[in-house]
Image (cartoon, rainbow, N blue to C red; front, side, top):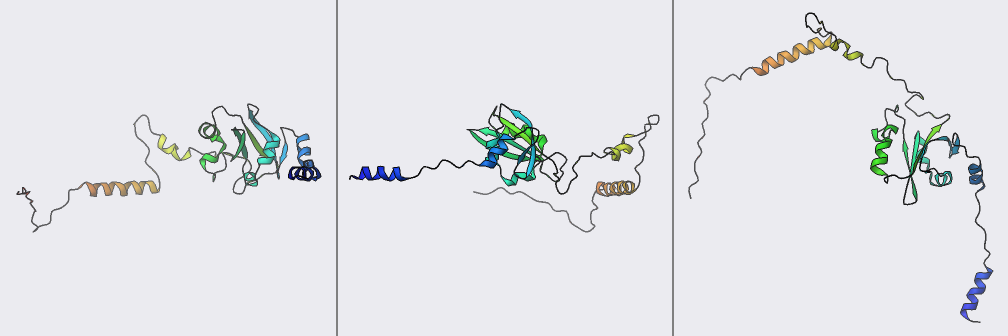
Length: 202
């Protein structure tokens, strides 16, 4: 037998096994619902899809557990590759500004291909992050600190005097300004210095 025939016989003897199909993946794909679908240990919902950018199967394969800490996950396509990035809700104070969902348009404009397909999913269910409440409640007295500064007597054109520690601080700062505006005292018995500039002799 020649060497070629031996190689052909060896190839024929190898059992060709079909690819093992992941039954869990198939079940997830069959039960997909855009309003609520499982992903790793969380439950998500599809918030926005642009140019058919959402592919559940690819998302499952590309997902990393690091993304579970984010409220939103944005997936964008470039060169047939799915890139995932996490974003927090705007009420999460300790999150960096560029990691909040209100900067999504900036992210798409600066880091994604122009006009690329993308999607946004939001984590739902029993999801609470450490250090913040699940619902955002803006403070009621947001502008209260400036109310006294804004009020003044329109008839006399007088602004109200500041109360409490502000008054003593203002007095201190005016006293410091008075001290700083005085010309320096000349010491008696000191000679004034005069300098002469000499030309360099060649």
